[in-house]
Length: 206
Length: 196
Image (cartoon, rainbow over all chains, first blue to last red; front, side, top):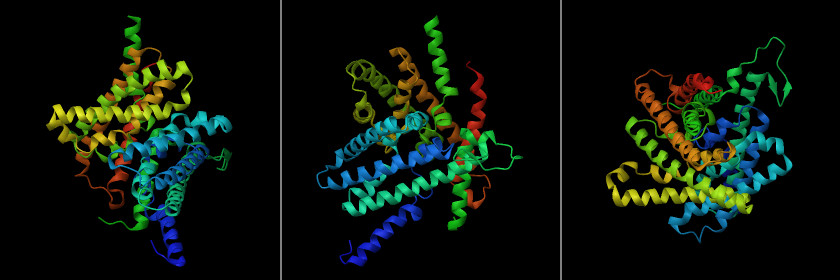
């Protein structure tokens, strides 16, 4: 880690940007696909899901970073999963108490954050090797990157499947909703096309 | 006869209609990552089937006989993930001791099963579907595993042929796989009317 102030700030900025685009969990690393596909039928659940993931990611990165010197290699993954499960339980209870409708709509996908590969991947690749500051910034970057993709995908799907955005009509009257966009097929195909688009933008050639 | 009917319906429903991969988006990561070759996909499917049956049964028993009896539902997720991790560890040790060739062929997939969302997802769905008999829980867990194996094998078969197809450069790899998966779910929607 760089010692002077400017170098540290540069490292923080770099870590943050890595999560947002260069190593974006969904587009670049293909992690956390299940919730990406499952909760993106509309923007609101997608945003809620994104916030839950950011919360769990930040908290688990802090805890893992704090106990990184105490971990034994073979018990590592188990400890990660237990830490994550604890914070997911907190997030789930919070949603049930304050956002009961959202909680019902998301159903089992909130507890499924436990096995979201993004969180374990960040715990393993970042938090277990770095100090708290870098871990938190990495968590925020990755979480925000994930949420942005989730919302973009959900935006496209909600717009095309119902003609609405945030449950408010935005499309002209002649627009015929594409029912298929709200179904599983819409999720898979839209994400596939978005990945293709990201490949064109970044000029991937192989 | 009545029970048998319920069990059969439950099995078919979880294999075809509520297939975890196609309708619940669970287990997508191995589905995209592993399904390049059909023999590996089949091995992965079998391993998942075994673990999902074991952990589905165990978590149902723990959930219904311990957690709900004592009002400990808050600890449900932590318990479930512990049971699954334990089951995977058990399977791993058993295979390594008694079936070394099989163990070698599974390789890295076995530990990865712990973080396969299909397994935790099924344990949570068993609770959500309000399954109230142990036999039904076992049958449904087994069905979920079979459904996963079927999905991952179909996908592997398609992808083996996709290698030879002329796909636009930007869609190569994951994007075209996702689009193919989308078309597959469309095909499986045809089963939706089979029960009720």
